[in-house]
Length: 84
Image (cartoon, rainbow, N blue to C red; front, side):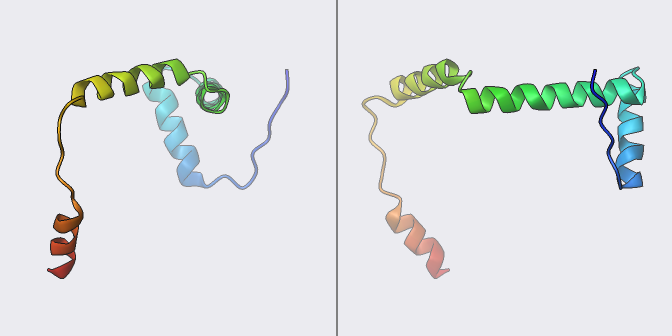
């Protein structure tokens, strides 16, 4: 397995990471592995569009919820707010 060296880490960040590790009952190394795993999974989902189906479903629900409703033009409200 690969090793990673992080140089010049702010001592405050290190202290916060150690606190998180203790709160989660993990060693510092285990906590860092967990954080890196979570971050890489989120980044992978974002870039690969893994959640595109969920997004489409949410858009369809919003469209159904607001179908047939009329909304006022907010231009006048914005103008009034700027004049305050």
